[in-house]
Length: 304
Image 1 (cartoon, rainbow, N blue to C red):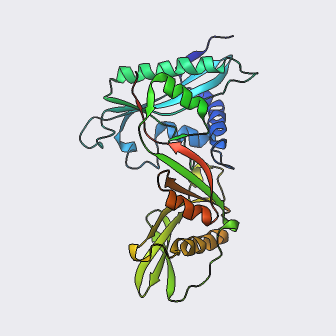
Image 2: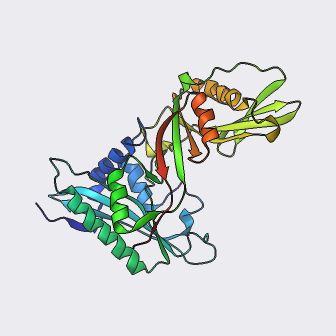
Image 3: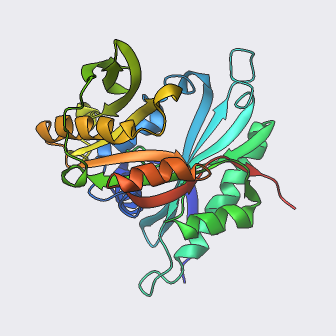
């Protein structure tokens, strides 16, 4: 068994790191992978995190090399301590993501490389002398955030290192657009398509008043990143006015959005709900969605 070497990321690690990242992405969401350019870009900045990314003071990427191969990697962030930074992030350190090979017959000692890398991450957080230490699994790919249940090896590493899940659990659901309801005009109900906050918005109006709306985002990947996620969209917002709750308007809006998505060549739609909101989950499953995975958000270092 060879001794792993933990060191800073080098540019010539990019292909092996991207392979590791894509192995983890593939376990969460079907048909999605990211390019080398996407991975390299996320090491310098997180363009989609337009609120929190400007708060980052320092970032570093570490890898564990064994027998000439990168078998584990982690990306760490240090947030500024000034008042412009959100309270939860102020003077915080974070393992933004951690990826590693799972032990297998052809890599029997891969777990031995992950442990030294985790120790190096904790040592870096100590050198930064941050107020609080967080951990996540926010890879630069659609749908992959928090700590997905599909990565028990990462969960075991986090828990062994003293990280504890203190936040919410989110249910991620997916549906084929062909399985979603077909739009049927409703008497007295009109639907208008406009630009929304999180994508294309479909608003249902009854008697000239908004009864509810749905927003779908068909731009989950930036063209310049060449992410392989074509045909994938997600629900950014789904809201029904209180006066119209319980009338099945969710199905009407989902059907309208599905018709638009099929015209766009989108064949899969993703939705997110809190694990505690069973009513919302049931509404989505009755419309044709199925549970894809669950992800646990917000991990904090609380060693016993």
